[in-house]
Image (spheres, chains in turn purple, yellow):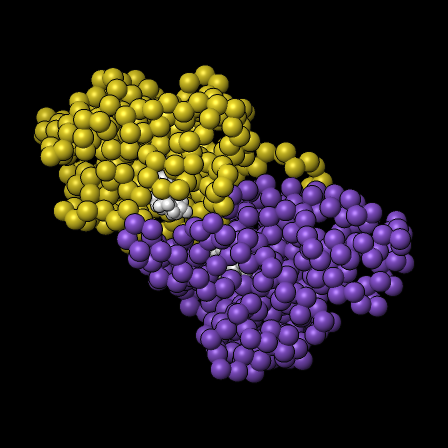
Length: 309
Length: 262
Ligand SMILES: Cc1cc2nc3c(=O)[nH]c(=O)nc-3n(C[C@H](O)[C@H](O)[C@H](O)COP(=O)(O)OP(=O)(O)OC[C@H]3O[C@@H](n4cnc5c(N)ncnc54)[C@H](O)[C@@H]3O)c2cc1C
Ligand SMILES: Cc1cc2nc3c(=O)[nH]c(=O)nc-3n(C[C@H](O)[C@H](O)[C@H](O)COP(=O)(O)O)c2cc1C
Ligand code: FES
């Protein structure tokens, strides 16, 4: 079954447990080795096609996270992933080692999203390998959509021991105040999320689904069940919700219902039935057509609809 | 982990009565340069004065935080200063239009404050009619930038009104001389809040920050509280003056991006 997660940094399950209740998996905001206060305000801005954020990875640091937040999360959250970040492979390893002993942590998402490194595949590989060395927990590598060749970075992550991919993080953007023509954010530029990211995320999922056999959590601009269905058709096994949660805290329930409706409109019993349809590969056709409740005569039609939606 | 019930299940937040509702607009009434948006109340709890709601309408991606101004029977009233894309869209809504409302959110003013005195500046008057009603006509001091803006002062019939260049902190200072125990409950532009905080560190200030979510999810609304960057939507928006750092750009014009009412 398709799982619905939140995108890291887009929900605080302790502040809004009822919103987290609508999810299959809760993912924490990225935790780094040392505490970070985050960037100065203003940290968010809106444009017609998306929003910018420059939160600056504000987080309590791994030590306080484990001591103060993890026990409460363990109590409330049936399925918990912790997102970790840092500025070197050692940073990632330090966070993963600190989490390894906690049974409540089902997986670790490695926020390997900095596109501004000279050898992104080597970098991702080093980070995943360092994390792999200190924990046996499933590792999801979260990649930037700005990578020139995201598929090769995904392959490097897979070879280094990643168990899955989270696609994608934000893209760099700039919004100016129309009156002063100065940047709204204190950091000038920030991470673009929301609708503008939708086709970008779809392309990243599509590329990585062909290049690796890793399960993919698709995210980027999902606002409706149709958007989620498209990610699944492009090769995502699960879907995460980010920006949509800000304006619609009921989105997890709504999108789950819409997703199943969107599948059924296409004659498919459940959303998982459109998995990889956009790729038009053997795997999808044989897998999908062997599932009960799917009308074989609809398949070519389905592929088109899924890609176009 | 999710429960398989329907998508209309109320979304509540920890320790709060916040709910999400799709409601109908009853009307938009001009009050000087501001707009008083009347929305049907549905099942929503109006909350405590100083709490806020996230309001969302087409074509906005993100909702906008608005204090509850009035809580007439069956209705929620929001006073809006149309200064940007979002506030303009809200001020343009017609009767019958749909709007998504989430709240009440955050922490309101302490209604048991000692000898409260209500202080407002500009659009900062927004939460004060509801506050005044709850405090049964506590003394109120309002400052506006022009006669046109001061029309909104009529929303607090017993208020003493001053107009630029007189600052509302002038009558407040006099008030505090005669009643040193009085607790100012204030909402207004940053220079006004900073000045109120200097007069009375025990004052409660309703502060503002850009908010994407209003319920602790985005960490966008960081302000300095107790010397640390904290989420205003979780800790506030009303904060004890002594805990809050308010940037004070008193003599310089306010950047419009900050959307600070004046
Ligand atoms: C708790 C709270 C209660 C408020 N109550 C009222 C009220 O009752 N009446 C009223 O007129 N205004 C109120 N405001 C301010 C109002 O929310 C902003 O003026 C409005 O969001 C600006 O949106 P805009 O699109 O019109 O302006 P723009 O400047 O075009 O906004 C661009 C972006 O920045 C954000 N933003 C910019 N400045 C602010 C700000 N100061 N506060 C919040 N978000 C900002 C917006 O959400 C938007 O994403 C309140 C703010 C807060 C935090
Ligand atoms: C306010 C905000 C904070 C974010 N913080 C993080 C973070 O801490 N770690 C991370 O990996 N991604 C973070 N992201 C990126 C999201 O997890 C997600 O990848 C991105 O927003 C795309 O999804 P969306 O378009 O549905 O929001 C953040 C995004 C937003 C909007
Ligand atoms: S507005 Fe999102 S955390 Fe406060």
